[in-house]
Every structure is written in C-alpha cells, then in structure tokens.
Amino acid sequence: MAIEHSSGLTGFGSEEQAMQAYQAAGTSRALNLGNRGPVRFEPDGSLHTSIKAAYEKIGFYVFTGVLNREELADIETDVLDMIDHAPVARNSDVDRHGRPALSANCKAKNLVWVKPLSDASGGSDDAGGRYTVKMFEPDVPAGAPKRVLQLILGSLQFSDACLRAHCHPQMLRVAEQLNGADFTPFNESVWLKHPHLGGSVSWHQDGTTQWDRPDFDGGTHGYNCMAQLYGSTAANGVWVLPGTHTSRCDIAALYAEAGSDRLPDAVPIVCDAGDIAICNRQAVHGSFANTSKDMRVTINFGFHRRASVLNSVGNGIHSPKSVYDAERIHERSRLIAYGIDARKKRFPDEVPYVYQPFAGREDEFRYDANAKAGLVDYNLLDLGI
Picture 1 (cartoon, rainbow, N blue to C red):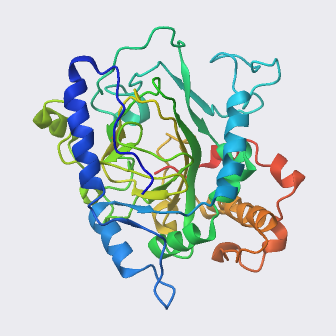
Picture 2 (cartoon, rainbow, N blue to C red; picture 1 turned 60 degrees about the vertical axis):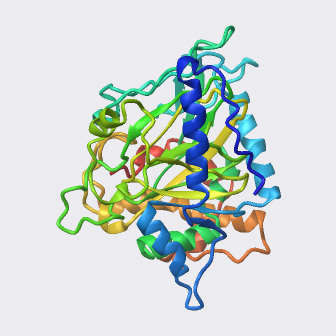
C-alpha cells in the first residue's frame, strides 16, 4: 500500500504521546481486519461472499482502487473550484474574488464552518443530541482563521465529478446487493479535513429513526460511501468501533469506561487515493481533530433500503422533517438516473449500471444544462433516517 502509517501529529499537548500510540495501534489493527480489497462479485453477480461476510461482521469495508487517476483529477478540479468559490467569510454572499459565493442562490444551508480543531457538536443538541460526548480539542496554531469550511452539503449540484462518482457502476452494484435493486439515495456531501485545522466529529451512530422496527437488523439505516481524493489516515480519517452496527450503543458509557475519547477497540478507516470505504450508518464512528500535515477530502454519498424509508418520517437532520412517500422517493432518486447518464457521457467505454426504478426510462433523465439547473436545492429532499 502507498499509505504512510506515521501520524505526523502536532498540537495534542499533554495527550500527544498517548494519541501517537493510539493511532499507531489502531492503524495496525485496521490493516489486519480482513475487510479491504477490490470490488469483487461472484459468477452469478452477487457481491463476493467474503466481502459481504466481512462487512456484516465488522460494519465497514474498504474497496481499494475504485477511482482511477482520470476521475480523481476531475474530482480534484471540482473540489478546488468549490473551495475557491466559498464565501470569503462564513455569512458572506460573495467569494474572495467578489463573485456570488457557492450556495448563495440556495435555500438550503449547504456550508458548515467550524472553529479550527474544535468539536462543534459534541455534547450539544445538534442532530437530535446524538453527539453525546465531546472530543479533545487541541491548541489552535498561531495565525489560524476563526473558522474553516468543513462540510459542503448538496454537493452534486456544485460538481459534475461528484455526481458521476456517486454513480460509479461498481458501487451501484454493491448498493443493489446490500440494499436491493430498488435502493434509494440518502444524501451527498464533501468533507474537508484541513491540515493543522480540521475539526473533530464526536463519536455517534447515524441511524436515528428505525431502531424499534420489528424487522430491525444490521442494515436497517443503510450505509455511507466515503470516496477518498487524497487518502485517509489515523490522523485525519474516520474511526469506527467494529461490530457496533447491530444495536444502539450507550456512547457516553463507552467514553466513561475508556476515560477519554480514545475508545480502545476503535480503528481508523485507512485508505489510499481512489479507495471508497462503505460504513454502516449504525456503527459507532467519529473523527479526531486533524493536527497532521495531510489534507483529507472525502466525497460522501449514501444508500438506503427502500423499505426503510418508504412511508417513514424523516429525522429532520438532513432535510425538513416529512413523510417519505413514493413520490418523494422517486423525486430524490432521479439524481441516480442523472448521475448514470453524466457518467456515460464522461466515460463512454464503461458499461453503465441499470437502475431498476428507472429502467426503460433513461431518455427522460439525460444530463444536460437544463437538468443541471434543476438540481438547485435537490438536497432539501434528502432521505434522512
């Protein structure tokens, strides 16, 4: 692997030595879990038995080498353009060039800013209070900005490359195998973990609404895909507590037992550029402040079972709370149809995925200038459970 396993940490003060040891040990455990490798399928088209078994046991899987250099270059161009178009300050409507800022024409609040190296949500009421513990906040380096851009929501309206990436045919085949041929989208975003500045995200479980379903199981709340532009390490990446996706956990109790935010059995999602990790939304996960020199850019997207969202009441975290009826699901799922067509135009030699809910209707969802214009605020229809 091309990944460097040294943490490169600075700034954790009295906790730095313990953090160095924790991240080194976590990386070693992560690379020996047996849950990484290329996307593979059985002769009958089903997801390879070993991949499915590892994902169902551990709660995440790293698919290696999914995005090639050409696609990564497209994504990098779009990410740098989004950053360049970000508001010059958190509440500004213009970017540093005086142009209308990214998302200035949107009703949705798509840009999330945090204080450098902070845990903005830990111990607060954010997202329904699911962030019950607060992460360690390192000292902020001299000259740091007051806020840094951490999250770009509704990213498919701002980036054709992200639209195409979330419809990579291998990843859509994985979605079909794990969530059924009528799988639905969840939401899409770009996470920016700036070197020496990126904030932490407190330990939490994403799933909120489906824990008491009579048919609840380890996949009820779907999963997230994390495509890595530059790779991810123990210092700047997401950490997961393996096996915690099968039930609701008392995270405050885990924190108290550990005596710190360094949960002893957790492992980092270690990736090279172009890898895509899938992580069960029920698994306990979080990330530490990025005091390292390495930038992490994660292209995030997720998928649900249709049965989990149909006629369910949304959690109100990713979009206004409402009932997800068939019409709502159909409208939100059109982004998959547009993404498949956009990908076909960019990579004409690639065999496109056939998304069953829109099979035979592909001509209705050609991705052109009009379709792109119609994506503004599409994420107000996100399917958050």
